[in-house]
Structures are given as C-alpha cells and as structure tokens.
Image (cartoon, helix red, strand yellow):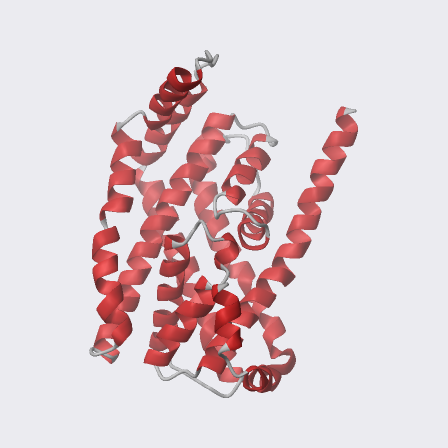
Length: 311
C-alpha cells in the first residue's frame, strides 16, 4: 500500500521522462553488482576456511550462492532471512556440517547488521555536515541511537550465551516433544568459535561495509545518466539511510515501499526530485530482477536435478 501511495502521488509522466534519459546505460548496473557479490563472497570464504581445508567450496561457488541468497531475499515473498537458510543448505551440499555452515551464515548476518549500522552512522554524519537543519537527520539520529543496543546485545548473546540450545529447551517444554541430537548445542559452539576468530571477523566485516558502500555508486551513476548529478557524499547518504530503513523493516518482503519512501524523503533533503529518486529505485529494482532471475532459475534447476536423482 505504501508503494502504491507513493506512485499515486508521483508525477508518472515525469518519472518516465527521467528514466528514458538513461536509455541503455542502466544495463551497466547488472555487471557492476558483481563487485558487491565478490566482496561478500571473499569475506564468507575467510570465515569458512577452518571448516574447508580441502577447498571443496571455491570462490566461484560462493559467488553464486551469494547471488542466490540476495535473489531470494529481494525477489521472493519472504522476510529478509530466507536467503540465509538456503545459503546454509547450499554450503551443506558441498560437504560441510550444518552447524558449521549455519554458524558462518549467522555470524555473517550479524556482521551485516553491524556494517549497516556503521554505514548509517557515516551517512548521518555526512548529512549533518551538508544539511545540519535537514528534517531527515532530526528523526533518524534518535532512531539510530535507540537501535544501537540491538547489534551489540545480539553479538554478546551469540558470543557468551547458548542461544540456540536455550531455544531448543523452550521448544521442548512448549511442545512436549523430545528433540534428538545436539544440533542446537553444536551450532552454539560453532558460532562462538567463529566469533573468536577476530582477524576473520574484521576482514569479512570490512568487506561487507565496502560492499554496502558500493551501492552508493549505483545511485551516483543513475542520477548522473538521467541528468540529475549529485556528488559521492550525497549518494552515500541516500544509500546508507535507505539500507538502514530496509533493514529496520526486514519483515517487509523486498522492502517494497520502504526503499521508495526512503529515497524520496532523503532525496528531497538533498535536492533530488521525487521523480529522480523513484527512477533510482526503479533502476535498482530492475537490476535486482536482471541479476536475481538467473540465480533463482539456476538454484531451481539444481534442486530439481537433486530430487530426480533421489527418486
């Protein structure tokens, strides 16, 4: 409904005119997205290293799994956690234990939360520097401060608590079902082991932050080719605050409406018209489809072949 309302109040002919100025130049967004996938895959590979001494999981495979994960989160009607579940399965298919694969994915998701937080801080600092009286900073800074304990407490609980073993115990008491095995305890142990590897954590987290920043270049490029150029700092502000709001509204499938509203509101503060901001969002949505559809098709074919061999 939010997305419908945004477009109903927008100048649709104006959006079409702005988008038509870009022409085929927007197709460059698809190959450029490979940089985002590569940075994430390199960080994930470092976290997987102790569990994969035989190098059964190559960088090319991780690059593909990363693209599948994003495609699921962006294109399928699920909250932004479905891709992580599929990622665990695809890594397990290469011979890694579920607990090891799950630990690296959970820690990677935690690093993403921290990276988004740092990226948002950078964006807000730039916004306050460029537009100290902007309405966006007036509302977002308190929200950012209030949300600060979330990644910190999550990291502490995963590092020092037995979160999944406790959840398993609660489930047993509620359902009365005796769950066999020590899968939850194994997952807790592997998560703690991952979090103790500070070098790998710092490496992967830095690459994830760089991947998030690379999304700013998409905004910078799209607005330049449609004739509404902005500087890199403004592009970082728009991308960082958009990512912050999308992650806060993670239960909204594909961030539908959230992304558009964030770009319009922040863009207005920076002097970007609603039509240009919505053109950016449409370009990002189109890139998600161009990159995500082949990933989903290839994943579907893989699962189909496995089911056929099983029968």
